[in-house]
Picture 1 (cartoon, helix red, strand yellow):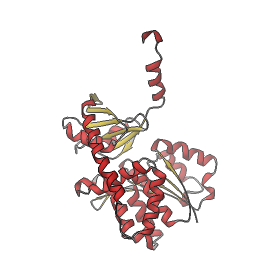
Picture 2: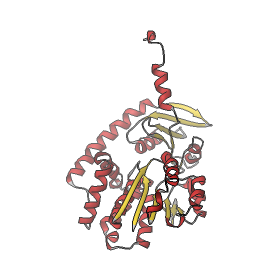
Picture 3: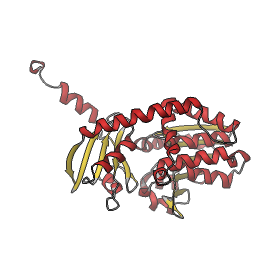
Picture 4: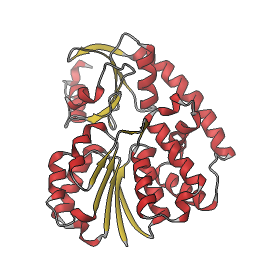
Length: 310
């Protein structure tokens, strides 16, 4: 069986489905995307009849639009397409037979990885999926992505993102495919422990430094704290939201990738706020793409003046 997987490139929750797929399927191809790239990729795939050569197509940890869902629903490959996502903004798409969006079930926050793992266990119940090393790694990814690691004091869950940042996507995938095939129990190697320890100090210093760089601004009736950052966006956003308790939400702008929104307040829905800017996500953690032409506008703003001004 020939399988194609489309998943999220941004974090471990999007990368882990590739690892699980490699454990299950011998003939696998995959594409990792940002949420903002999904529509263009799928449009090109439709035009090129790209999915005709595959027996099964999965999409994990990615939000899709109503328009795209309708296109898939009216396509010839609808029956071989399966979308598994946990972003609350996509809940209404569950009316489509090929889409499963679950934010929380039985009091447990789901992730793209955990939903895909359950699907594989049900439909492809091979022995390796039941290994403790695999189930524990899936659990760590879920805890890290949903931030339930804080609820259960599982620091080891967020360390997977540290390893991913050091290894890079492809090495992370290949390393953990080999690791899960060879080990019944999950653990971090001594080298990885050293990387984790070093990175924790680096992250804490980075967050402490960014506290003085926050710009406060009221946007759409919300008190926001805005910071420009490329590293540790989730940790930074959550730490700043806790530190500046009078702020409704924190906006982290990564000029290389996207915009993140974080809040620690139960009465603030950052998913609704993100939707105002073309984004989506969860109640306390969401994101949106950078506006089209932003980088060009920045360049023109800085260098578009008469040279005599310098």
